[in-house]
Image (tube, rainbow, N blue to C red):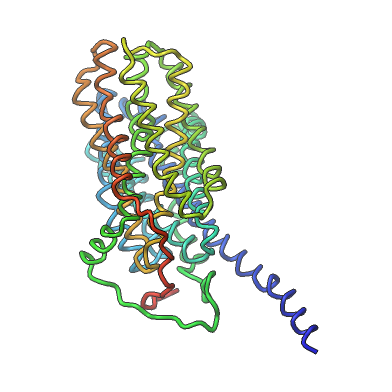
Length: 442
């Protein structure tokens, strides 16, 4: 007599799951598109550099101020962004970030002087900082734990698509719509999209993906900000994620965004088109490796810990070969492999957020992620500034240019050593699921 009801219940459970899973993908998809848009804004000056120099009447070298300002503000906003995600929820924070980016791009569209242009890029950097952690927060809330590594990798993949969109499509826009038309279109579309999270996104489902509808839900109060950050940093997993992010991502950021072309033209005797082709190899490796790493490593904590050491180790070894090579100029194949390894390690750096998340209570996971994100970006900012100082006017020989890139190796090695010292070899069970105090509009 018990057979038929059990059969009906078993067959209907997956059907009941489908609407919730479709809703989860929709919510995360909105966040992923927001991150794609943020990356498009962040990298939009790459193809517009020459136009910007002419518009503002400055030397091309002075445009480094735009990149530096955006990276510094992005870094400075990481902790506030994580706290906003934990306390106010991704729904509102994503909308605020998109609105700030739209305002910054519209200001940039009509700027005719360097100070106004810098103000516009500053707003873009602030809004950009409010996206990534909130997308991860949505993934944590809406999907079961076994899918978290893949969701983190797919989030990185969405950002990589935004980076690709900032190349040829943006160049076509500048060619056909000119400066003002291109950036007005970009800012206007972003302003319209800022409404979408408010309409389609909810901070969390009514029933947790790993929970039971009739299970106890424990309400928790948020600790003071300083105590929240201190508790996150005390967890070995947060520190391991921080150093993994530093050792695996910062070399890619330094090379891809700022100093790759000067290094290859100055130390490797490549032309600018050849250097750009080598960087494209690294970018493609970055795009592809994130999802592949997530598939191979999966949610297994031991594999994640090993990968957290393997990627900084690979980057350290690669750059030790490049920067200690006698005479500076390495064979072309060696350079290609080294840049590809740098891109793969950057894709693997997304595991840092999953490592930190597993050891964090749900109400503070974004704060831990913010600290992790500071690892790679703080190293990229400091490393870029030191390399710029060492290169000076860029009129050095191959060996001097090679030695100027030593901060890349230094931060990769620091990430590796830090990971070795902080890796928690014990098996930690995830923190019990709790829910924060109700968020209005949730």
